[in-house]
Image (cartoon, rainbow, N blue to C red; front, side, top):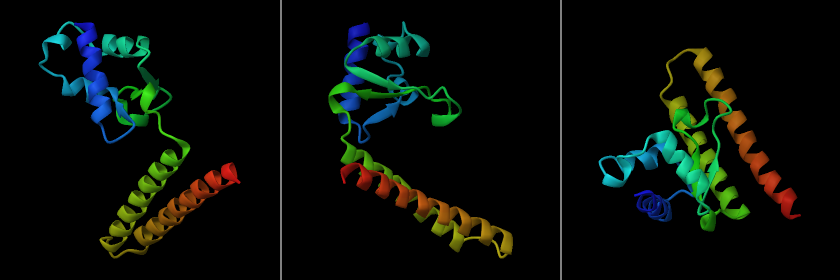
Length: 139
């Protein structure tokens, strides 16, 4: 049963768009499967931790990942530095876009305008720092 469950985790991660997924999302996708019935979420994490096919990114240092447990990835599908850069830029662009939409929909008070502009400036600075960090690394 454990091997079957771990094989399903591997297949799930091979088909995922992202390089790693919250353990709780993986766990939840197997709800009702016979191979999951004898496991708790905690024992599921331990199984993954002990299997050399996977790696965990611990999210216990605070509230990252919204309590969904660690992120799980496949050893054979680790992202390259270029892929990490692309992912970070994409996520940052999504944040900037959402902030721009929030700015357009803001209430007519000067406080929210200033706050949104400050956050947009910070997000754009983060994007610049990502570009710089990866450029410094290659140059």
